[in-house]
Length: 268
Length: 173
Image (cartoon, rainbow over all chains, first blue to last red; front, side, top):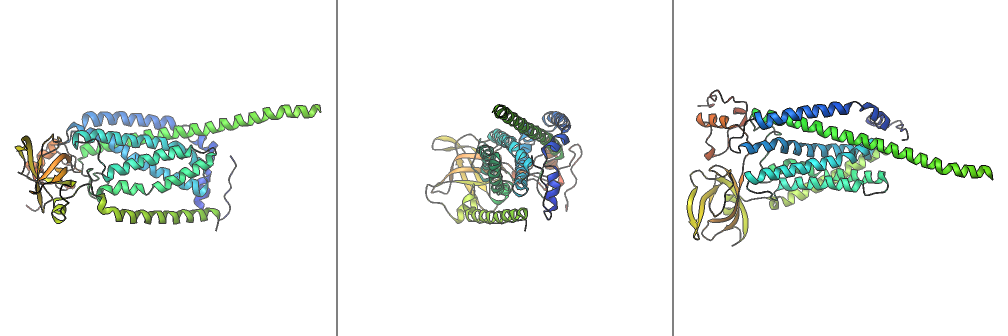
């Protein structure tokens, strides 16, 4: 990795960002984070499961089915929050050519596709008993499906080029174009009439949810977010180390290739 | 202007262009993106004869007849209202669990010449409120809310309510 010294006059944010662009420093910094993140995620998710599945009350009209919400809503928030993260990484990649942002974006996308898929599946399982249908093409459901395809498209596009840097740039452009979908997902239930109900929690007036249901939901959201971060961090660290191993192998192969040639030259 | 600053400006310009293009497209498609029509929409712009569409609204309180008959088959009749207007609906089939008076529904079918909507499918559309049964009971007992008449009161009134204690008196009464 070439050391990048920002030219004088570059934005200050750029120079601060580049301190974390060094993969070696990133590995050292995050060395001890993973066990803590995973431990906290397990703890919060375990207690969240007990709270959400056993202690929280049922809904007055949906009954026990409402507990699907404790998975469905965190997955929906992570799908959108994760995509916002992908967009920020793509900006850093395109503007500051941040190598670590490329690697993180590449490892974030499969996790984002997974949570979006879980959001769609749990929503479908919830819609069948409550609405009476697995799926409808209303604005909310369709825009989340588009979000899922954007994640999948990023996964495929980044890996479609022989030159990883080119793939990362194409993926970053796709991710930034896809950002227009985020406000559509969020406000689809306000702009158009949909089968999906409007937001209960992320709205300006008081949450339309009793605190006995709201607090376990927020707790589960914290747990799933910690688990998501742990997965992405582990994958990014693995990718950095994988790249180092490959660089070392390449160097070794070059040395092995150069050695006999040097011997022949010495003999001649 | 450094290369980085130029890249920021290029990205900003692209974002501006893409954003306004999307906004214009969505505005142009707004009328086509409705999932259902309300009874007032239908009465103002009657759809063509035999054209299938979705009708949405609340099930009018006191309008549900469960033991009706339609073309020799057991049928359920109810009225879908948006507050201003209402349309009668007849349906032979299985209703979703959440169907009740005052509940939001989206029905798909055809409007008959007699002005009765023949539904092929009835979906329930619940609102964005979630509360334990005890809290709902407390609100109903205190006279704050009749679910058959419409939406729950503002969430600030009940989302921290302890169902063990009686609901606070209705403001202004």
